[in-house]
Amino acid sequence: MMRIDLNCDLGEHYGAWRMGEDEAMIEIVTSANVACGFHAGDPRSISSTLQAAAANGVKVGAHVAYPDLVGFGRRQMNIASADLTADVIYQIGALQALAKAAGTTVDYVKPHGALYNTIAHDERQAAAVIEAIQAVDPSLALVCLAGSSLINQARELGLRTVAEAFADRAYEADGSLTPRTESGAVLHDPEEVGERMLRLVREGTIEARDGSSLPLNAESICVHGDSNGAIDMARALSARLSGAGVEIRSFVGGR
Image 1 (cartoon, helix red, strand yellow):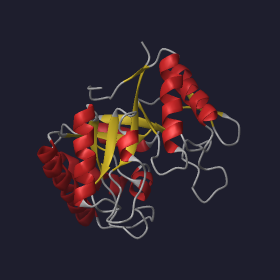
Image 2: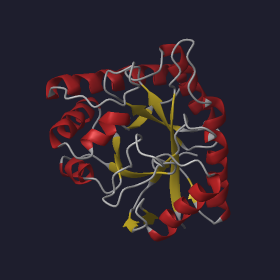
Image 3: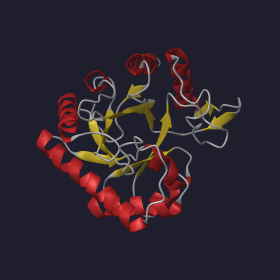
Image 4: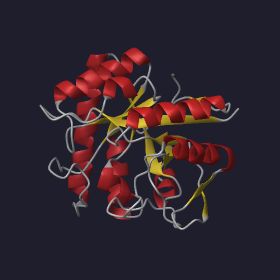
């Protein structure tokens, strides 16, 4: 049977500033990438998201990031390896404590934004993130951009990796995500997104921005919670996949 995980970035509210609709999204996805305070998220909103995840049987991952609240973690930073390792350890540890209080656990790590894109090809920063995960808990899975060199680097160092595709993002022919500064980088048509992801699950391919067919094997699909119409898109995607006989289930078990 075909199987895929649906994940979303959640817990990104910060004080009076609201981001996304966590309560609605958490009823759709099977894995929640929860902010750890470095790019978004305050302790109360993170705790609320973790409680909702626990109540809905949704698996939790630490959505670690560069220390960049102003830029929402989307500005690339050339951080020293020791500093980056310490930053990631700090974030995972904070989320583990909040998760324990909420009655759940942290099962994986998914870097956010610029950190995610950087370590997909930057071996030095990738090694710093891998070192942090191994120092905290080597059993934690690392979610990586499907097709990136990070997958082999992490596996060679003993980490379990989970290849990820993005439902609402355009791809370049080399497998990288189209930069958000480019026109058409973010997709908004639920029907188009559903067909693209069904093709990905069935055939292991996706259409790149130049029209070429890009081989892409993924265990998890991300829907961004901060996109316009994100809830409708996630619901439509879930319905399209389920209707085609695809089992939607977290890569670490559970719902």
